[in-house]
Image 1 (cartoon, rainbow, N blue to C red):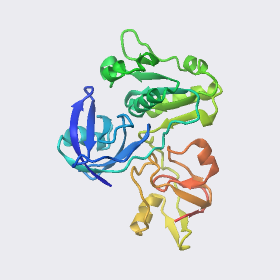
Image 2: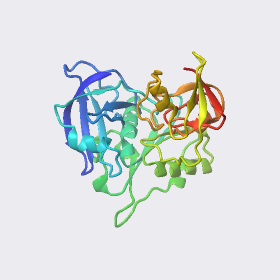
Image 3: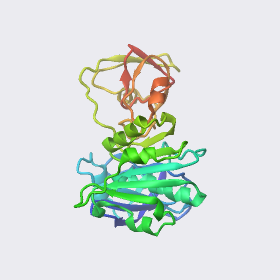
Image 4: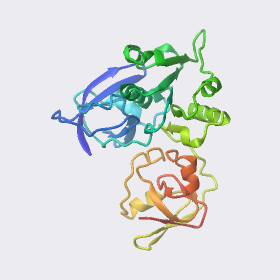
Length: 317
């Protein structure tokens, strides 16, 4: 964990605030790469993940942008209403589950709403490296669009296309046309609301894009029906202990109750912190950080949300 303080808080739009974090003594922070996120340990006991949106070359600060989501479970509301300049808090070191593909010849960056935070960082990194890319930024209106001035001043401004869906003259993105216009070998990176990402990714698949060129980052998992959930067993490989997981409890909950040491953060299958190696059994994957191919491989398991289709899972714990 890193002790940090809020060195600056400002409004980017009416619903998005920009938070700058630094060490209290001003010393260097751990390096990060474009697409990385950090955990904020908030004063109300919540832990939330936010993508870093400042340039990866900076080591004196981290910058995040937070949308005041009306469906917030408390995190974004606390950041907007309870976190102020000068406040102290703990943060994690950066982790990256959404990295740029180093070998890609070209990159297509697509952001929906607050999904601009990792995408903007990627654009700045690619511009700095001389990488080939184009960026599409989809929002409801110009007034709800963050970082307009920053993008307008950037060297890559002419490679960014804005799309607004709720104006007198909507300029919505023609997703199929965008996908079909890309050169062979282009990699796609998309971040935003789940429905938006599903639309972009499914359109790419319909246009023949292979899964290995599709990259996405979720901010939150969609609610999964727990109707029909049943009990199952988890065996810990290190001790051989067999633990029953009730139908209404998660594996993580039960393991924590038994003082089994498993790192965790989001508790909803978004961040990948709690993922453990799966040695035996058939899981019911419910996380959103792994790809479809990784789910099919059944090599990892997210105990915070996933369950079992077989009677028992053997975990490398």
